[in-house]
Picture (cartoon, rainbow, N blue to C red):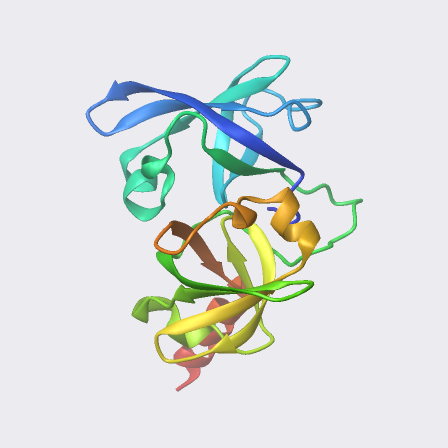
Amino acid sequence: MFTGIIEELGEMVGWTATGDDSGLIAIRGKTVVDDLGHGDSISVNGVCLTAVEISSDGFTADVMGETLRRSSLGELKPGDPVNLERAAKLDSRLGGHLVQGHVDGVARITAREPAEQWTTVRFELPAAIRRYVVEKGSITVDGVSLTVMEAGDDTFAVGLIPTTLGLTTLGHKQVGDLVNLEVDIIAKYVERLLGKRS
């Protein structure tokens, strides 16, 4: 479980194939390896991965075909920045919202609209998750906990402050780039429970 508060802007270092549709991804990130252990969960661009090998300045993680098909991790190239967050501790503050690291959809950025102190970023809204995205609700974009400013039929928008732009991949991504989306897990559970009653 994560909070969507990015701890470090890391870097994708490389990829080693371990099978036809699986591999080891190597990530550089000095902050997140401080107390990271073998088998620990870590979020990379919003995808929950398991740390395999840890060094003083990075780690590797297994990535299987299912993860590659459902996320944008397969699009990463060496040198690309990545959002990193270690799993939340029960005694820490919940600064964002409850994030599982289970990607619900992949979408492209459709527009960036800079203002003086913040930037509005617009994204495609995949049909499969449209019903979970509501104005003023929470959404995770590449692992970043954000508030939905606008929710349309096929797009949604968020507002990014300078801190978010400077400390996450969302400050680097351009129109046409892919992002991982995770909707609020509570909305999915409520839908399932109410559906069983009707």
